[in-house]
Length: 184
Image (cartoon, rainbow, N blue to C red; front, side, top):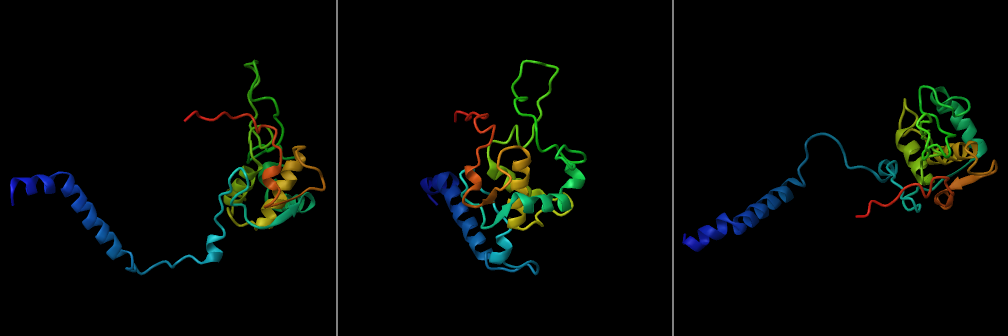
């Protein structure tokens, strides 16, 4: 090998060659089986949602406040209380105007009502994390319904509200202007 070849293979060219070989090795392993698991089905993948604040990514479904009260009673009340006041789980309502105050004796009360800027965040959190004993077990309809119930109890939506993938992102949250961009 010449001095130039050694330099190229040992420097940037060597890195490129190594990456190329590693890429080939990865490509070769792509089709190998390890004896466990399976390719996820579309139904299994439908359980994973991550909606954006504007509603993109919300799954199909709908739920009313009345339906949500039933879901809440069955799956949420034991931890979050009969009046969403909290207990084992966090308090869900109240606390408006407590995040920014000049009184050091008054602690901020962070709830869905006072802190969260987007209703889609509520859907996402419930869908992935609740109920505590069986996260991800609620149907999309149940999640829309319990979201409607919580937002109603927080005086954000009317008692006759029905939430779905088309209107959840349009819910006007009390703290929608409470966050500032990071300036990046």
